[in-house]
Image 1 (tube, rainbow, N blue to C red):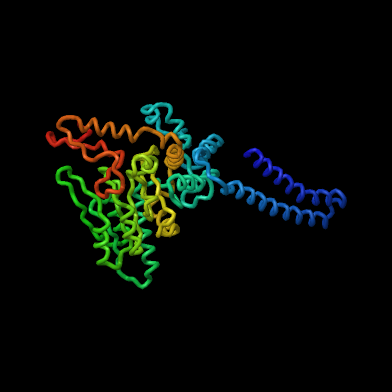
Image 2 (image 1 turned 90 degrees about the horizontal axis):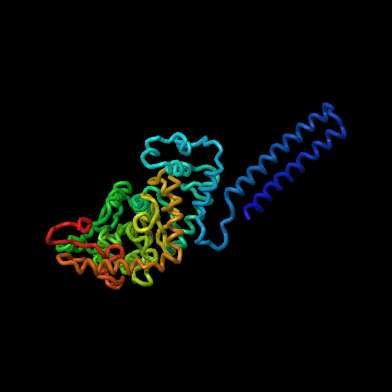
Length: 427
């Protein structure tokens, strides 16, 4: 298909060249190089030059923006393939980064990490033709993000190269911006509802957006030192006392694996027309096993924006993440898109983005859903619970129907040894 497409391009260019050049050649051969004829030939050449450049630009735009219609194939990796192909066709790297595809890389790196570092540098490229642009994707990045949206159950997915931190900040900024657009006469600082157990990036978002925090204290387990999630009734009572709420942010799963009742929280937000942002940094894998665990991602439970650290529970490179906008989101995609450039690098790392593309591919493979990871987690849970002096927090097989008592698969082996006051990693 690629060869046929390029052959058509070449033939089109040659046809345009012959059509434009043929009249000038015939005119010169029949009439001779007189003064009037030379002037007419000059005019023809100018017209040919202008038309030729238009044709070249049109073909270039057609090549850089191929049609993206039709069925999306989850077995494809558009960005990974483009990065491989483009890097192999570079003749001279007259572009950043300064290591020039590894030719000027510090020798200390290759000496310390081996010769394979040279291969890694080859793929550390920038926004050159064929690799699209993360800030305004139109080609392979756009297609990779569409594939991710389909795989994770969103209508729109954004690749993040500054971690989930950037996604959380951008989401809260979008909540505030949308609130101000809907309420143009509002002159105060809108509120963001959030539990005291949020990640520090949510605090940074308050500073950047100018929003005021409306804190909710979660229930706290004094024995295990673990915070429980916010319940729908607690959220509803807190929100009914305020009319200037721009958004709500919830952490689920928590850093100890506690799952919130996202569906219940979403119903509360629906009633007040307030967007719900879910920090699902530790839950990118949930939908892969929901048929067996009963635990679903917030992307299918009514959230308006879901931020996932793909590098934490899936397999992309550290610092790479995704921001998903579910199908019925109250947040306008364009508002999120306007917020992201404020927190994303203008020089995104293509290795990070390619790893997101590859992690999505791995997530969508049948082997992922059919793996025995949930069973392995349950076995580990049972074996840890059988160890004398060890108390394991959480029970396997509990789904979302028990808010506040549900725990994600990856954390069912979390433990706390009261006798020696040490962490599970020290056991």
